Length: 327
Length: 293
Ligand code: SF4
Ligand code: SF4
Ligand code: SF4
Ligand code: FES
Image (cartoon, rainbow over all chains, first blue to last red; front, side, top):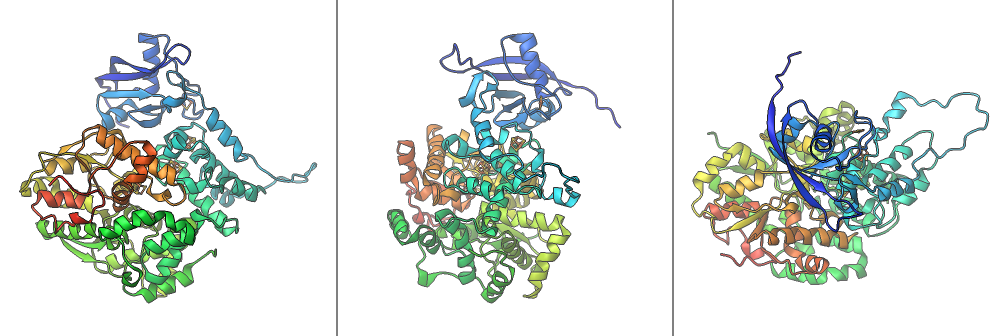
């Protein structure tokens, strides 16, 4: 192993400060210090407290990336402070760095946030095995390595909340359960010992709260320090809904199914027909004002002018032979 | 330099609700001397919704599209962020999972095709930056956009998940501080505007099922650009464009402020700087009128 020389750099930190008991508004405090190439973000938080201001508050416990307590944001990027190297942060953002709590809206004191909404939503998806267990079992309940692989590492989640507070829908829609709760729902749905899948799908399938309100921005996949990839699990939950015939016939489900219909007919997506099919003949009317404006600018293709893919017969054949679900 | 050649996957939007995007792509390619061969056989990529319904079908159809770039021996170039994501994600999943690739190829064999994994997939934005070169674009600018403050709107699916996206970029893009589109604005002589929403979501994908969420996200983006003195916005994604250009009334309503602002496709911006005419770039096709020329 080659030893890399330890280097030092001067870094200016803008640190979010807020005490919900005494401050009306949060403010930033600027601190400049020498940072060595071996330090992690948590070392900086420690040094702010020890060397600059003893009243500075933050959470940490394990120091090994496993308790999820030390989540903060550096220049907008959610990180586990104990895992993230200062060198990498400087590489990404330069030597002026802003340190924020994961959600300023939920700040209690400095980096410490109130995660009640996170835990409530976690609980809402029934994050435990639901199963009839014999009172006096005669043998263990085996789970083969292959069966446990089906969890797709969703069991690695440490409930740090980084994905939850990075999710733009959580910011806007209080009912939305969020990426961590969905990943957790998948984790138990995918467990061979579990019998609560239909119950859980019933929970995550609700308009407003459920998977259909995810905007597919991939913020959750990007931020997760454990590579849980919540959006991938959300897709799996969508798939489970259709596979188990639990899909509710509504605008969201028809929006997904409509693509298959359109591709079968044209190869391409018929945008107008997708909106009509998803919304229904009455619901579609609310889109008429925008559609007229678009039509005036030559942005609407009429049904009789709908372009088609070349070799459409190939596409039709594949849609027929490769479809795995029905709606 | 040898003439650059790509297999163009237009996606559906450029053939329907954003015709100006297809026109301007060809106009810019011609100015730069890039040859685009249209993948006329391609189907819709499923726009990140088909896979919710039927993941396997989505893989087969996207693999088929890639086959046609492979059979032409070309890199596939996309002009929509979501097409880029779906296609690159399909490639990534098939290339790393031989069993899945075999299952997909079994289906493709029915129509005489085989997915091999020999074509790269890149968005036109990165094709012109990485392969053609920013410096060369800058040298070719005849009408610098120096009087404009231009706000870049990156669109999620070109920058996240970064691990996947950076597989096809020469210079890694930091999803928390992307620079490619800013660099392109500067190369065109414009002034790039920094604002918080530049790498955030426009909400397009829930427009039907969660219109309020979608409108707030669009409104926030337009507001961010406006409050930082942007004259107009520019985006590489036709879906973001639809949201920002045609839905500003809903967005204004959602954020309680008039947020109407001209929004250009990146191809139109480059085209303007290279001296293309407004007609060639389809500037008459915008709902939020282009009023600054
Ligand atoms: S992909 Fe969906 S769940 Fe994940 S952060 Fe975005 S909106 Fe939230
Ligand atoms: S999924 Fe990842 S980011 Fe989200 S709470 Fe779990 S560990 Fe944290
Ligand atoms: S920014 Fe919006 S429209 Fe563009 S790719 Fe992302 S979600 Fe889709
Ligand atoms: S202190 Fe436990 S994860 Fe960082």
